[in-house]
Image (cartoon, rainbow, N blue to C red; front, side):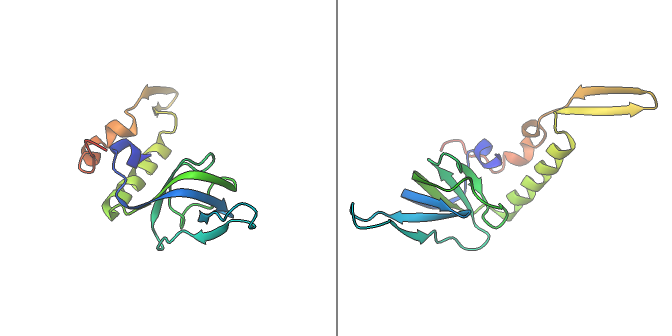
Length: 142
């Protein structure tokens, strides 16, 4: 969500073609000629701790950290792109801060309570709250 907001995915390499998602992992398909049996699957060469972006998938589109995500979407075959991403550690820390902020304000409201009196005000969304820190990483053009 943050990387798409700042239009910067910190792309290191991009694979384009046919892919399969099986048991929570992404594989590159090397489709054989028709009638020669099932397609060969090669694991995506992703170093530990790497983030990836999936496009073209029906169930798994988006940015994932295979080490943190329990699994991708349902098993499927798709044609699209898989990007190997390498966001800087400072941005990952900022993402943790944003996650903590949105957990404290899930409905976008700020609640106050003083004895029997309580009120709820609209608070700024995470994009406004963290804009100064996000601008450092923002790309003007994709």
